[in-house]
Length: 84
Image 1 (cartoon, one colour):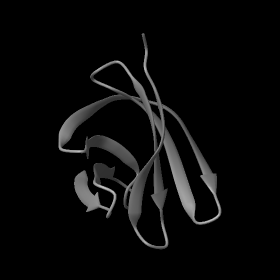
Image 2 (tube, one colour):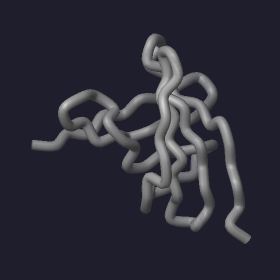
Image 3 (cartoon, helix red, strand yellow):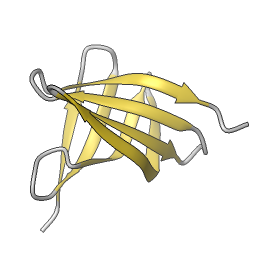
Image 4 (cartoon, rainbow, N blue to C red):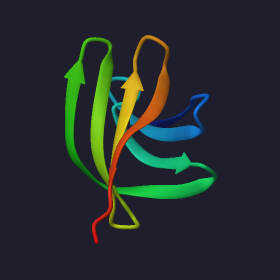
């Protein structure tokens, strides 16, 4: 059974995640500065001590790097690349 979990940080990034065998397994959609984005693909993910990073392609075709700080359970936008 799948669940989703919503987490919002003080910087205005809200991420809704698929929660499978662990919480916040992968982002499904996110809101940035009031605009909603559907994640169409998780292009890559990597780990650092206390954090997980996801490079995702959104419905607008652009790439976003989302960081989940596992200690504080907050999300931030760490990178952006326009596809055009």
